[in-house]
Image (cartoon, rainbow, N blue to C red; front, side, top):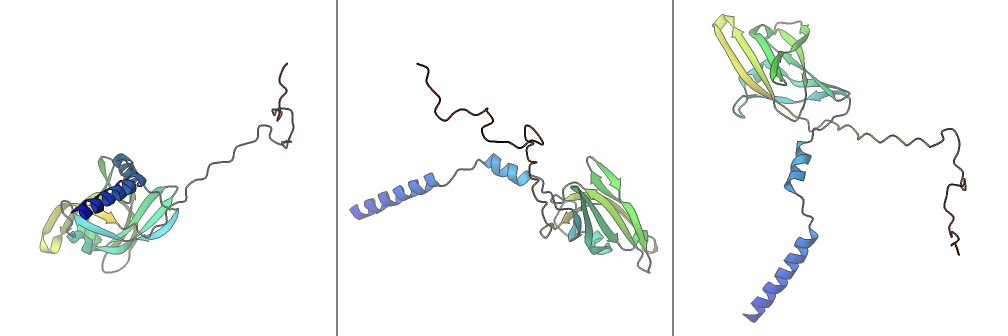
Length: 195
């Protein structure tokens, strides 16, 4: 029994020492780091995506009418996504959330062929958040019509993050003139003491 108390005391001492060495990070700091918007490097990239139902993580039927992956264009921290939709005559509208409103996507190109493909583009503020969208689908030969709220989830795992901006170097006080040691502004190493 005495050995058990001694072992418990040693364990307690080690636990206290370890806990005192582990830095304590406030949860608000961790949350702030996780909420920071990631900035991706300028360039053009392929961007995998999923289209999900508005209120669940089930794949939306609308995903079957898109081609993957999308194309992402990053310029000066601005994200433009280009997506190809198929059976484009079925799509009466396709709107994405921008702030508190929903705006129509821009048609970039109508592609030739029997499957009626159309390239559309839209801006995205944060690629790591779901993008809410609204679609209106009408299929005339089966007399089907529906308006749906969907969510688009982008896979950013392969995108390069923009490098941190380096601070600009400070300008010298007298531009164009080299600084020389002993210009009279320094304190002497051993100042004389008044007597």
